[in-house]
Structure formats: C-alpha cells, structure tokens
Length: 364
Image (cartoon, rainbow, N blue to C red; front, side, top):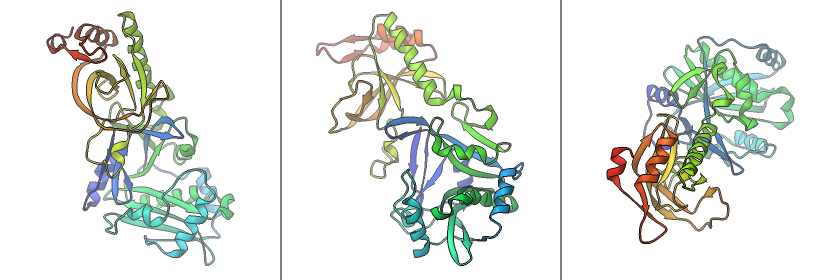
C-alpha cells in the first residue's frame, strides 16, 4: 500500500521502532504512511527522513542556537495538555500559513483518550512564561518528533529548530539509534528546514528499494512522482505508435484510505494513472510502480460515484476506486503497448472494452 492508516489498540515501544523504520508516522492515536501529498491541488512525493544518532554531531548553527537561547530554561517531562499550552498553540496557529490540527487535544489524541504512545514534551520558558513546546514519542531504540510550536513574538530565536535540536540531543544521550523527522516534499519548501538539521547523519527512505540511504545520495532527478509521470508519458507515446489514444490522469483520491471512515477498504492509492480506452472507471488502466519497476494493466471497481463533474482533462475525481485485478505486467512500455493493442477490443456497447485473457496470458 502506498497510503495506509492503522488504529492499534496498543503499541509497544519495539513495534513503534518497526513502523518508523518502514516510513510510518503518528496521527493522533493512529499511525499512517503515505508516499504522496497534495497541497493546494498540487501533488508532491513524500520522502521520509531520519537522523542516525550514532553519528549525529551538533552543527555550528545548532551550537549557536544553544548559545543564543541559553537564557531560557528548558524542561523535559512526560507530555500533558493544559490551558497554557493550548493558548500558546492557538497563538502559534494565527501566525502560520499551513494547516495544523485544530488543537493539541486533537493533535495527540484524535477522537479518543487512550494514549498508546510514550510521549515526552520539551517546554522552553522565559522566566515563568511558556514560549515554546515540542512533543516527541519514544520507541525502544528510536524517537520521533511530533510537533513544535512557539510564541511568534520570539520568532528571532528560531525556537522551532532549537526544539528539534533538543529532541535529538536528548534522544542521543538516552542511547537511541534514530530520530525520525517525518517527511519532506521536494518542490514544496515548507519542510526543507529538515534537510539542514543534520546533513552528515541524515537519511531518507528510498521508495524503489525500501532502504534507508544517506541524504547526499538523494537526487532531484529521481523523485518518485516525477518518475511515475515520466514512465506513463512514455507509455502514452508507445500507445500512439500502435494507434491507441490514451489519457494521462491525476487521481484525486490516492490518499482516501487515510480518512477514518474509509480506512480498511484498501482503496486504490496510485496518484497518477493512464486510461487506455476512454476515461471511465470500468475500463482497464495502467499504473507504473517504482517498487517493482513495472507497468501494470489493471481493472478497478468503483466504490463510490462522487458528485464532482469531470471539468479538468487531466484530473480524475468522479469515482472512488478500488483495485480489482492486475491483468498484465511488464517492465517495457513497448511490450505493454502491444499487449493492450492486441488484447483489448471494443464490445457492442461501444465505449467499454472486454479483455481476451488468453492473449494476455501469452504476453501478446
């Protein structure tokens, strides 16, 4: 699954370690993973990050933050929510341009009260005034930063970055191996600050290989979403050579399985698709999967027909889809194009297509 949400009734520390290593992250009392994001109707790849605490060393910038904020007092303890923190969070929200949870209660607990995580907080005080707070979870050998917020009047002190450093420093002194930062999204600058927190010890989870690699091996030429688009566009060209017009589409509901009321349906979660014979959920379509480097000709079920009308030529949002069957797979765009041209033919209804599976099984 490229997007998935899980509501565990309990979660042991070692289990959290495993989830984090697989690119999952906390959401209220749930835990989720996704590989693609949408901000202001634009799609991005989500690249998961962690810091290797065994090699982490404070940078000159972090040492400067430590020196500049030495006049403030710091308290690290088991997390709890009170009116003072809620008021600070509300003040912080009024000065940011991105969406957050409506309040700390929702951020940490969602709609429930049972706390399955071991969550600590770091509070920063100017004398008796709370000016910043950050939450982070502890696993057995790992920790994960959840949130940082601060008084906008103290913006010049870079308290958000200071909190991140304090979390990593605490985790390292505790003997943990990794500190998980969540994700960044290439092309969307809001999360780029994470790339400067620990360049020498920073790692990213490679979607194609499912392996954590040093961040200096990351290339903006191999962003997963860009590769998927490029490969489908290549297939689009191959189909044209055999006389088939196809339609490249962005799929609006790639992350629908992260919605609580839809969770567990194992919905179709590819962000881009290629319709081979008309933009219709009943017709076969093609995706490209980086994890096996193959094109997959698939059929889908329409779980729900939305109230949206198809107004944009490259955006599919009229149906909520669920994968029905993988019909054929190939690493080659030309092979896939030949199979589609040979195995699909119009039926009597004119718009829909039926599949000759005997031809598919022969690969031609």
